[in-house]
Image (cartoon, rainbow, N blue to C red; front, side, top):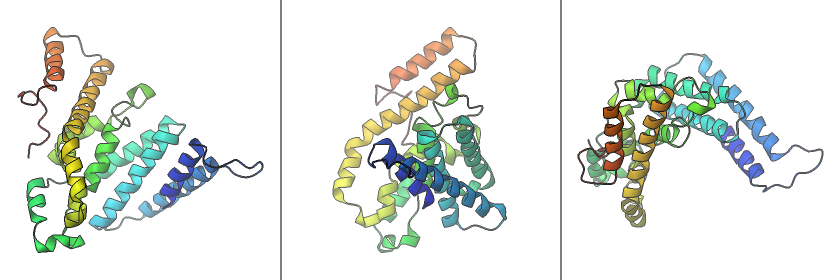
Length: 252
């Protein structure tokens, strides 16, 4: 709750929605206040080792996502952003059960059963959506010029856990709303999902290529004619939906 208050107050300040009163705290001050308390309380809750349920683990990850979002949008220190990203990495390492392979097709088919309306029977894809936002929404893929020493994107690619691969995250994130709401998901939203499919796929492919471009720039990899031509062909293949070189985001 405190992170939501911190983000809301900071957003209201940035958009000038609250008139500043001389001698009184600004909305930005309130945002920083709630953010500081949120970080303090979150740290205290993690001090004592304990068994956490899947729901609690999801809530912890959602809180970390909000903290990353706050630092990215309203923070003034790259180090603070990096600490939160390192926290995400530590959580992925210590709790691999948070991300496991889920058969999206089977989940969608099971939604037709009578039991699918029960909240406890639904499969959650919210962590996949949040991690994809962290990776692809200009947070980690384009932070290298800001001075970050590590890349969370590189970590998930090299983790050996296929459930963390960005293509798998994208596949799960596309259907998280339908799986969360079940039969209550409006038909209009289903139509919108289908209409937006190609645009979202292009965005995902573009961000993945952007990460590789930054990596080539900052890793100082010796230039190779073959490597440059291969990468160029991958970029051009994104235009062709039937190209075998196109990223297969729908692969199971």
